[in-house]
Structure formats: structure tokens, C-alpha cells
Image 1 (cartoon, rainbow, N blue to C red):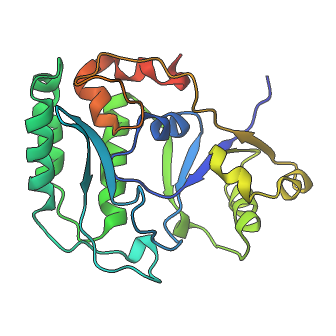
Image 2 (cartoon, rainbow, N blue to C red):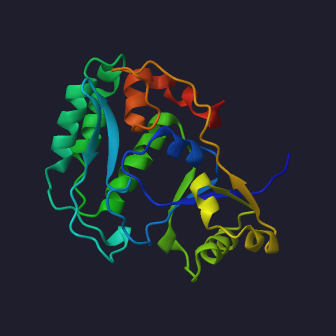
Length: 231
């Protein structure tokens, strides 16, 4: 088995789905890449939950962020956290492990008072990592020097962090130049998000692409057993 440091570099998401935490747990360092432009109607400030009326989006309201980086994006409504918690409580109160995790998740929401989206996302990712037992180091992209070029920047971040493996999400296959990784003796790996097992989820039919909170409320302390990286 090959040894060496493995990293992943992704933009922050709001209460992401299980695949996001799977990629975090698969590497030694996870770099949150919020030095790129905020994209509207994306995962940066919203995610999906299950309800008895189907899938529902819960969204953190942000100021118009055209030409702004994710790290510069600010929220518009300071009570968003209360609204989101009320939504979660309404829709997950009958989940098997809701009572067990209610106070923990409620406290996360009520104590979340940053005005910056990146800080909010980091806060939730960090605390959900703790719930799942993920020990991976979290870093910000601005902890490093950033060079120009999409692939060039990723390769350089690998070099600065002394990584020998780079684990990428599959969507990046559309633009990554793998030869630049080869030239620096960095092995490019691809995350496979297929084949996840189903779990005890409310409101059929089953849906994989919902927030990790859905898995936590339904499976409790066993939630991480539904991530590939814990098998």
C-alpha cells in the first residue's frame, strides 16, 4: 500500500451531504477553497432536507454576491438560524435518534452568529466532523499562497501542504489537467460517490442527496457506518 499525505480541496457547503464528509474523512488534510467566486443557486448556502411533502431546500439568505468570493459573502437575515432549526425540528422530530441529538444540533444553530457564509459553513463542518468521529485537519485556502490557473493552483496547494496524493470530486474531471499532477509526482485520485447503502429514512422514497443531518437524526451514533471511508 502506498504511503504519503493525502489532501482534498473543495468549496465549503452548508450542512453538506454524506459524500462531502466521506471525502473529508478519506484525506489527511481538507482545504476549504473559498477564495473562488460565490455561485448562486448552488450548495454554498443551501441544502436539502426530507419532509412529509417531499424534498425541501433550506437556504441561508445572502447579499447579492456577483463578483464576490465565497469568503466575502455575507448573510442578510440574522435570524436564519432560528428559522432553519425550526424547520429541522418540525420535519425530523419523529426520526429515531432526533431526541438523542436534538440538544447538540439546536445548540449549534442557536450559537451560530457569524455574518460570513464561509465561517458559518466551517462551523457546521467542524462540529459535524466531531459528531461523526472525523479527525481530519481542516484548513483555509488563504492559509496558503495561491497561484493562477485552475489545475496549477491545485497542484501548488498540494506542494505547499507536502501532499503526495490529491483526492478530487468526480465533477472536476471536466477541467483538471492530470499531466500537471504527474509532472510533480502527485498521484491524482478520484472520489467515487456511487454505491452508498440506504438507511432508515423518513418520508419515502429514499434520497441520498440530502444534508448529513438527515443521516444523523435517523441513524444516530451509527451514522458514520454509512460512509465508505469508515468501512
